[in-house]
Length: 342
Image 1 (spheres, one colour):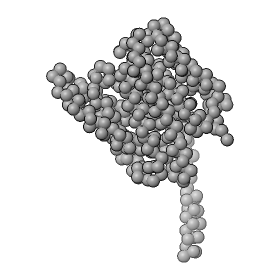
Image 2 (cartoon, rainbow, N blue to C red):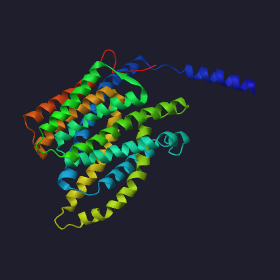
Image 3 (cartoon, rainbow, N blue to C red):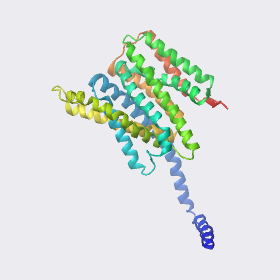
Image 4 (cartoon, rainbow, N blue to C red):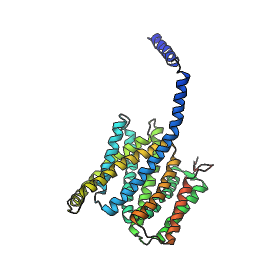
C-alpha cells in the first residue's frame, strides 16, 4: 500500500509536469489575448460600476421623492432576496450561513448594513440629490473615526485634510441650502455611522474568521449580509403591506410605468452589488473609490437638472469643498493612507 502511494505520488506528479507544451504560435495567441483582454476588463468594470451606481442613485431619488412609494423596506427585502439567491445559484457550496464562525461574527455586520440602507433611503427622501451626495461623503469621516477607535488605525495627513474638507464642506453647504430640512440632515448622520460601522465590522469579521482558519471573500460577505437582512426587512415589509396595497389601488396610478420602475430598482440593485465587486477585483479599492466620487459629481448635476435644488453661492462653496475632500481622500499617498499600530 505504501509503495502504491509513493508510486502514485511520483508518477502522478511526473505526468502532470510532463504535459506536452503548447506550440509557440498558440502561446503567443493566448498571451496576446490575455494582455488585450485585461485592460478591457478593467475599463468595462469601471464603466459598469459608474453606470449602475449613477442609475441606482437616480432611481432611488425618483422612487422616494416623485413616485413616493411607501414600501421602502419591501423593496430592500426583494433586493436582498434576489442578491442572496443569485449568489447561491452561481456559487453553490461556497456560502455557509449556519457555520458557527459566521453566526458568531456576522450579526453586527448585518445590522449595520441594514441600518445604512434604511437611513440612506430616509436621508434621500428629505434632502435634494446634490445635498444627499454631500452628506454621503461624511461616511469617510465616520469610517476614519471608527477605524481609529475599533481597529487602532492611524492615518496620513492627506486623509486628515480630506476629512476636514468633507466636514467643513457639509457644514457650509447646510448654511447655503434654501431647502434645508433638519430631519434630513440629522438622519444622514446615523446613515454615515452605520455605513462606517459596516465597513469596519466587516473587515474585523474577515480578520477573525481568517485567524480561526476559515475564509470570507467579498462575495460571501455580500451573500451573508443579504441573507441575514431578510430577517430584518421581512417584518418591516409586513408592516408596510397596507400602505403598499393602498398605493397600488389608486385610480390615477400608471400601473405599468410604476411596475417597470420598481422592477428596474431591483435589477439595478443586484447589478450594482455585482459591479462593485467586479470593479474592485479587476482594478483596486482605490479605483472604485475614485469612480464613486466621480459618480457623486455626475449625480449632483443630474439632481440639479431632474429634481432641482436651491443652493446659494455659500452652498456652492460648501459643495466644492466637500467634493475636493472626497477626491483628496481617494488620491494615492506615497506613505499609504493608513498604518496599523503595533
